Amino acid sequence: MQQKISLKLLPSEAADEAVIKKLLANASGKKKSEIKGFHILKHSIDARGKTVWINVTVNAFINEPFRTRKIQEFHFTDVSKSVKRVIIIGAGPAGLFAALKLIEQGIKPIMLERGKDVRARRRDLALLNKEGIINPDSNYCFGEGGAGTYSDGKLYTRSNKRGDIDRILSLFVYFGAEENILYDTHPHIGTNKLPQIITAIRNKIVECGGEFLFEKKVTDTIISNEEIKAVKTTDGLFTADAYILATGHSARDIFTLLHDKNILIHAKPFAMGVRIEHPQNLIDSIQYHCTTRNEFLQPASYGLVNQVDNKGVFSFCMCPGGIIAPASTDIGELVVNGWSPSKRNNPYANSGIVVQVEMEDVIKTIGNWQLAIDKDSPLLLMEFQKTIEQKAFVAGGGKFVAPAQRLVDFVENKISSSLPDCSYLPGIHSAEIKNILPEFISERLKIAFRSFGKKMKGYLTNEAVIVATESRTSSPVRIPRDNETLHHPQIKNLYPCGEGAGYAGGIVSAAMDGEKIAGKLADVLIR
Image (cartoon, rainbow, N blue to C red; front, side, top):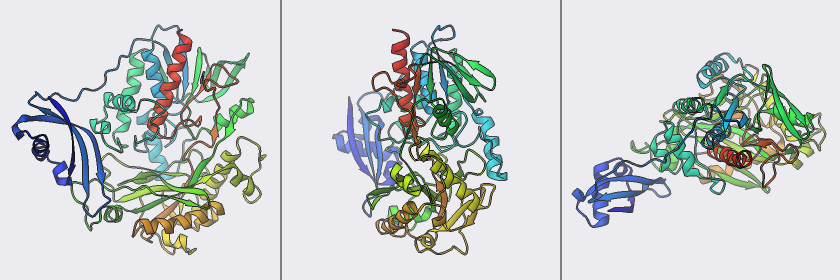
């Protein structure tokens, strides 16, 4: 028989299959020899007390032959001769998973990606990191797989009501991810492994008859009778029955194009702040209540949130054993993000610490920040975001060197006379962060950091460095869509999708939104 059993284990016990079998035998009242194997169903770390525990729920095979875990099956059909075609603009998770869903429904997807494939993309990232040279169409945000490909593949989401999370995770396993993402509380693939998975997805799309076209930046749309008749790239026009817009949160040119074409869009609140980096061993000692992390424990993470003057300040995209990366998309703008390899074995821990930004906050600062844009414009928050990034670029001195400050110095309004070692490869330059961020952000950050230092003893330290700016947390624009049809309220064959359209926040939620759009499109096109 098979039986679900929950265990509370020490880290060393959780790493020893023989010990787990013995404990399963005790829990089930059976002999150890009767435990033929087990599957882990859930796995989480409980570090709230002085002793760190691993909580696992397993499916035990008792007096029954052990069978390997059954992974969900998927059936992708040949769509090379399909008369129904959908153009997908953007090959991030929303676009890729929309394409897979369309193929399952017998519809041919045509992927138009402004950037390069994951392999060619690496050369552009190397140029950015080593020489401060940016390709506006191939960088950490743009290219095959989208922003998540080189931002480490975190798969944790709270979007339980948006779609089938297990299906998305199973698809990742189908394309090469390790099975532990199916049961870890905070599943994570790693930047070193995600590119191969993205390549496998692309190969499947092409194998099934879909088209995958790189360096095809959409520059215009041809609209007639409230329908898109074609999209224009530098290589000409592309036509289809419908168009999925899945361009990601940094496609400012697309937002501007839609606005210029009088296609309805809205300003959307987002969050902005800094990325903070501590030594990983310091975070380990705080979270695991130890001087040296147990060899069976993964590098520690954290999640922090505080309300300051009715506005949330919170950690974002925390990367244990990670690296801070330049996530800019154009010259003259400084954006940072973080990533971790699958083993999370770098000596630093970094996280975004950001403050909610609302429309009224920006309207109050238009004069101070010299925003040459009408306060009623749907691009107001985007222009504000860009202006802060430009200030950070200037403060860093150019070539994507980032302005930085020791944490306590920032909180106490002191200039850092020196800076600690930092994982950010283009380099950091001492600057007063309060002169880069608007006051409503910088002052709330100072208060929140003091609070975080009380919650995590040792967190508020000058061993930590903050780097500006963490500004691409989500899209500053929402592209509306009808609640029932999911197409744009003006353009009936335009389907806004994913993070860039304002309907997702991360790889899994974007993938689920892509599937949702593709499913709705299939109902329309093949009914």
